[in-house]
Image 1 (cartoon, one colour):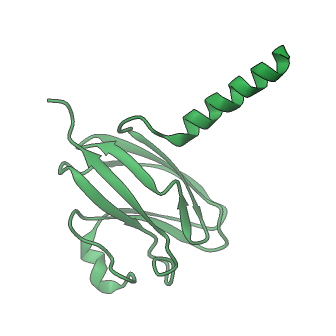
Image 2: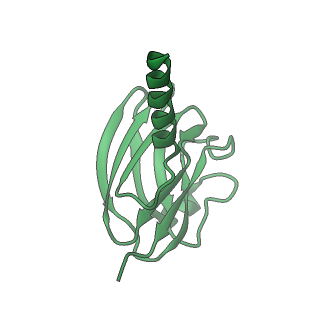
Amino acid sequence: MRRVFMILAVLFSLTLSSCGGGGPTTTIDVTLGDFQFTPNQFSVPAGQEITLNARNNGAVVHDFVIMKLGTTAGTGFDDEDVPNIYWEVELQPGGSTTATFIAPTDPGDYQVVCRTEGHLEAGMVGKLTVVAGEQ
C-alpha cells in the first residue's frame, strides 16, 4: 500500500510540473514535431533574457519564429512576413539547440510559427505571452 501511495505521489507531482501553470519563466522548453509545438503556449517576463531549449522530433526542418507584436503570418508564411519577425531559430531534423534572446519589452501576445512551407497552414502555431515585469 505504501509503495502504491509513493508511485501515485510521484505521478501526481510529474503531472503538476508538466502543466507549466505558474507565472512567466525565463526558460522555454519546447519540442517541434511535424506540424506542432509542444507545448504551444509560453509566458515570459518583458525585457528579460530568455533561454530556449528546443528539440526537433520531426522529419524535416522546423523553425521557432516569434512575430512582432500586433503582427501575424496570416494563413501562410511568405516573404512579406520576414520584416515582421521578432526572433527566430531553425532546427534540423533530429536536432536540438539552446539559444537565448531578449524578450520584447512590450507586454502582449506574440504569434509563434514555423516558417517551413505548409506548416503554419497545418496548424504549427503557438503563442508567446509577454507579461510586464515587477516595478
